[in-house]
Structures are given as C-alpha cells and as structure tokens.
Length: 495
Image (cartoon, rainbow, N blue to C red):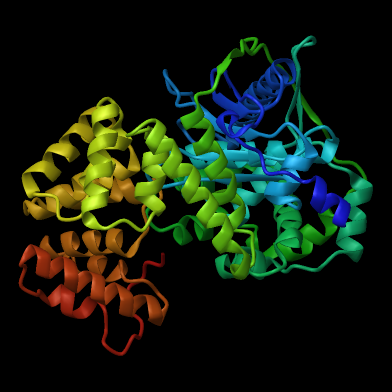
C-alpha cells in the first residue's frame, strides 16, 4: 500500500514540470490528455466510433426513438479527460472507472479511467451513454437512465466490416447475479430516493436487466413512455398509461434473468471515418482540466477528505483565469460552483462575455449576475436568446422575463418548455405556479407544489419571494396552492 501511495502522482501542467498535454478533436469530442500523440488519437477514434455506434442503436431501435435523434448541424464537442498512466489515475481517483459530470451553465465533461481492459472500456461506454441520454432525454428517470446506459454500452462497430452489434449479454453472469446477487425489488428500482443509498451497483444491474427485457418483450410500451417524456409534464401519467405490463414485471423479470440465450442484434452501418485533429494544449486549458478531475472525484469522497480536493481545484481554476482572463470553461465553472461575492461574480461574468461574446453560456452567466441592473440583465438575456433560444437555461431566463412583464401565458409556455428539458427546481415550479394562477388555472397552479411536506415548505417560501419581487397580490389560487399544514394539495398531477 505504501508503494502505491509513493508511486502515485497527481498530473501536472507543463509549466509545473508535468508532461506536455494534447488536445485531440473529433466531430463529437474534445480529448484533453497528457498521453503521447498516437495513443491519444487512438482513444479519440474509439470515442467517436462508440458514439456513432450508440447513436445508430437508438436509430435502429425505432421504439426508443425520441422524435429528435439527428445530431445538430454543429454539435458542441464533449470534453473527455484521459490520463497517461495508472499512477496518475490512482492519484486522482483510484477506485473510479469513469464519471460523467453535467453542469447547468458550464459544458459537461467525462473523466475516464483505464480503458486498456474490457471492464475499463465498458465503463467508458457506459458514461458515454449517459452523455448521449443527457443530451437527448434530459428528463429520463434514474432507473431508465441507468438501464438504457447499460443497454447502449453494448454497442460495438466493426468499421472494416461496416457491422454494428448490440444487446449482447452474458447468460451465465446474469443467471448467477439474479440467484446470488443483492436482491432489488421493482418498487425500490423505481423509487428515486432509493438510488441515493449504498446499493447502487445492484440497482444498476437490475435496471439494465429490466430495460433489456422491455426492449425485447415490450418495445411498444417502452417506446410509448420514452416519447411521452419529451412532451408530457407529468411523468407518472404516461408510465401508467404506457406500461400495461407493469403488474407482471416482478415475476417476468425473475424469469427473464434465467434466459439461456440473449440474442445479439446486428445491422449494417457506414459511419464517417473519424479524423482526429491534434494540437498542443494551452496551459490555461490544462489547469481547467486538472480542476475538473478533482471536482469530478470530490463527489465520491467522504466529506472529511473533500476540502483538499476543493482547494486544489480552486487553485487550478484561479491559475487558468490568470493565464487567460475570461477563459470560458474555467470562468463558467467558477461562476456556477464558486462562492463569489456580487462584485467578484460581476467582474468575472463581464470578462467571460468580453472574451466570448458569441457563446450563449457566457450571456446566461452574465444574466445570472447578482444585483445586475434590470436593463443590463435583459440585454444579456436577449443576447443569450438570440444565440440559443431553445437551450434550457435560456428558456428559464426568458420565462422569468415574460413573468416580470406580466405575460402570463407566454411565461407558462416557455417555462413548460424548460421543464420538459429538465428544469425542475423550486424556482422553476414557482414560475409555473404563478403564471398558472394569474391566468386563473388554480388546479394547475396547485399541482406545481412538490409532494413531500418538506418540499412544500421550501416551495411556499420561494413562491412568496417571487410574488413579492413581482409585487403581485395573492390570488385564491396561491392561497390554496401550498397548505400551511403541509398536507396534500388536492392535485391529481404528480411530479
């Protein structure tokens, strides 16, 4: 153990005496690594091939198609960070095979572990699947997210034979796990709170088996539900409507686990050949990547071990912004996760906008600046909306503007668009409740209150704060929306 600890060394930027870093870009990825050029380009090529394979699987499984499966004309590359050696990986996180880390304002990132063996490659494909689902199905519940990731990670493409394969599953391993592994019930699997416990590995296995079963035995039901997630506010209603087989899942899943043969599916595919483009990384970008490594790993640490990681990540972010004031990713991460006073936030958001006036994320960050004058905030929101009107964070801001202007119907419509993209905070609920109440739809206004009593209390405070900010008098809808007793709201809609 002492030997491993002595050999492990946290990666460094070149200006700190570390190995030079490379940036390898493909159609869908930006790989940041201290590997040598040839292995780095091989990793980038594998990433692109796996992404194309997963995209093709979604297209092949027509019942999983969400209705918007084509890539954007100019997709935003996903940052992937890969380290050159086991020693560096162990210094960052010796027990993590891969992490997909989404942000609200900053672009998402994947931190990958050792992909020299089958298990490491499987883990990486699993995280890539999460990234794909995050992009295309942001509201998918945890059980389906994990189950679909388990399914999509089986996608492989033989570029020489133009052959796509997916759906492979070991019958013997599945049977052994079903018989001797930790038991997880269907009700537990579908309960979001159960996923916060220590039984996540067993739940991922069961979710993967369940989704595999649904795709092969109940594809129409699953397709009905997946498509409904894009358009329906209440995710419970389409679940009950689409899954007529639900009452039999408990018994059917047990039977499915003893399947003696899981059929592998195949298709012909002719994806474009990846063309990695490699260049040296700027030190500012390297420091940002190093900061993201610690941020990703910190969430898996015991609380007592997090402060050193947080401090080291902050040091790297500060250095990145010294080398390149207004650097986009570093600036956005600091603005989103840092503890800045209003003046520091304003100065940094202004610097980010000056450096990146054509990036919608920079204008969203500027619009979120505390104590920003109303005219400047509206100008920032208008810039963001002109660049990316359909992005969730932009929709949230434009809904707030419509609410402030008293355009209740527009505020409700825009806020629902944001909700369907995953905006589900108390603030989002309050905007929808206020807009619904002002147009006289009391039943809908009440439905936006969370179901748990603790959530109702926090929601009542947020609702009051927003109403006071808008200087709106209370309406009968508002008085009924959150009972003082914390009881049920009487709504038939569950969220």
